[in-house]
Image (cartoon, rainbow, N blue to C red):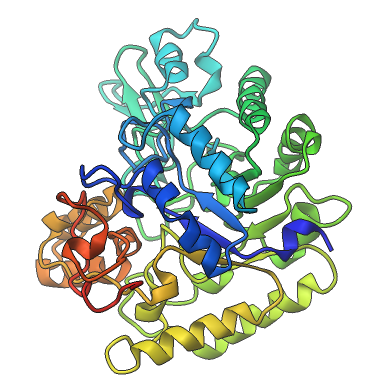
Length: 450
């Protein structure tokens, strides 16, 4: 068996893990302080969510410099120290690799938008807008919706064109069809691997290949239409992934895991198979998309079980998957899948047993090991997540009562998994001596490590 398949992994969301200097934001030194805890927990591999320089529109997934550390997390010297301390304890460290998009403040995009003639113009996806019949108005190139809500296109007045952003408008999509762009990404990836990191979790990688840019069918007459069928796991993506692998991953003995939205069982061999595989394993999300997206209705347990069973049977033949119930984008599993009020401890233990006993590589998300729960904020102002605030605003604009919309937010927001780690029963769960960047969960004195 590959060494990558024999590990127990732990995801750290650094902003909320441990604050070493009292500024209310978790940092690299704070992670170092907790490495012995992770080692004692039985962790073999640590995945750190983005720590690169970023304007923080989407908490670090909007990167403005791939080769620098966000100042509030520390310095490159701090990172080198962290890597050394992780290895000293016999653990591995992988980083988040965000290469579907950058920040609009990345120098590449600044150059790209500066002129239609700039060499980096084609590093991003630019299109002319549609003209009205009288040519008075300029509309988006198509009716695609952003995953974060609203249009997937943002108008640039200087060039009179639109750029594509599948996520936030501050996160323009990279044009993977451009060889110069790919080479620049490969150079950056190899730079990090040469520093000695042990691999990557590759973010949103199934979105790098776009199909055509035609309108989506719109039977419901929506202003903007979800566009996954045009930009998720499109034909030809395997060629781009093979190119990525040959120029980077194949040169090193590393751990790679793809965030593989849209990847199905029949794709396993192509993505993670022994012969054709592009990654060590994938995060597949089929079992996390079975219930009402508003988060209010209970999920169908039988379908959940059947989905997990199908994937288990598949990897007996070929390929490999990560086992998980939580991450930085999901709600807390004990709140979503269990009964946190009456059977909190029993629910948390049952869920842990259920997924740890399957075949695959288990990933624990910070706080999951102590059964951390969803938040219960009283106001939309308490939430931080950009996608949450956008969807809340859209629902209010469409006439939904605030109370109902807030209930949906509480059940679905990504902030549920981003509240401060609850270490002990001191203020803010021992996460910080200052004011945390986001409010601690109200139960921080009851659900703790120590």
